[in-house]
Amino acid sequence: MPRILGAIVLIVLLLGGGAYLWLQRERPAPLLAPPPAQETPLPDTAAAPPPIAYPMPAPQTPQALPDLDASDPALRSGLGEFVDAQTLAERIIFEEFVRRVVATIDNLPRQKVNLRQLPVKTVPGPFLTATDEQGIRLRPDNSVRYAAYMRAVETVDAQKLVALYVRFYPLFQQAYVDLGYPKGYFNDRLIEVIDHLLDTPQLQAPVRLVQPKVMYQYADPELEARSAGQKALMRIGNANAATIKAKLREIRAELLRVAPAKAPS
Image: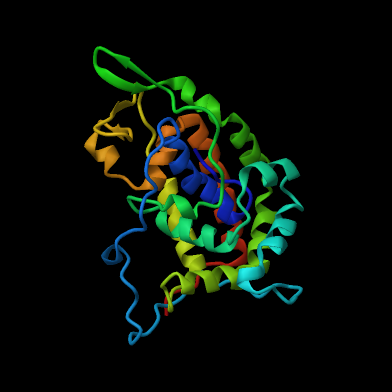
């Protein structure tokens, strides 16, 4: 479920973005459209920008960065220093990678994620369900499908991941501005999204589902009303979700070490 793995963004991505798509794997469905404009209003360009809560430090060894639209090879090379080549080749989409990461992270707390923008590939195999006298339920062994992804998540070095993120942060910030946030600060949004994902509840078995059309939904309206990112984490199983949350906490702690919260003025 979690396509989270690789870069700070990847871990969150993998986590949320990829997870969302993997959940829908059993039956093909139309790609989701981007969130409606009113759901993500553009900031008022006349208003003062909000204060930055988690300012990113300048890299200790400044170096020229590639242009955003030509940055895929550099990011691939950077991730290749601590993510194995097979994972890079089989799991990650290096095509407008930074833009995909930024868009996916921004959308995880929403009801819908634009599947065309995900930076990771789908997990193989069908989404496993069973039917009994009470209806459709999620099969406990569905969580086994994500074993390889969980191993990848566990091996990610949070310190190296955040160091790479800091190094390329200007590109992530530019992509966030281009996404429609001229006065927004991407690192603040990233930490906000991590906190949102960490708030995902554990589910008690059996997890009941309904299938009103093509896609499965949670039978519990309160669960179905949660964000795309949280629903993805819930469906991968409590143990897998705990693995992802543990890595997100590591990443969050490292982020706060390099970009401590700024005291309100």
